[in-house]
Length: 99
Ligand SMILES: [Zn+2]
Image (cartoon, rainbow, N blue to C red; front, side, top):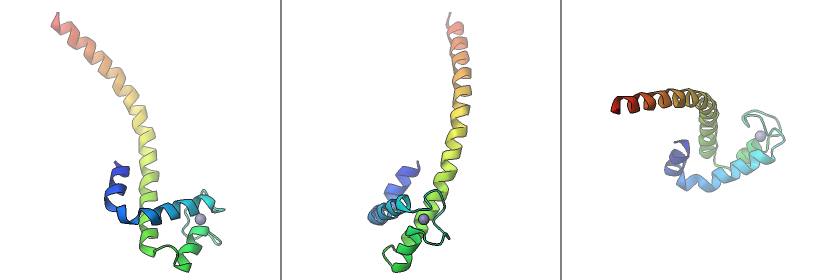
C-alpha cells in the first residue's frame, strides 16, 4: 500500500528520493533518523541545497510511516497465522455441511 502511494504522489521526486536513500545508506548514522545527527550526510546535502528541503521532509514522513508499516506487518503476520488456522477450521465445517 505504501509503495503505491509513493509511486503516485512522488513520481516527480523519485530522483531526489533515490539520492536521499543512497545518502542515508552511506551515512555514518545509518540506523538513525537523519534529522539531527551532527555530520549526517543527508542533512549536509539538504543544507548545501543538493536535496530539496520539501523532498527531505517528505522522505522523513514516509520513513516514519514505513517504520510504522513494518511493525504492523510483523503483527499482522502473527494474526494471519491464527487467521489461517481458523479459516481451515471454517472450511472443514463448510465441507461437513455439504454432506
Ligand atoms: Zn544521516
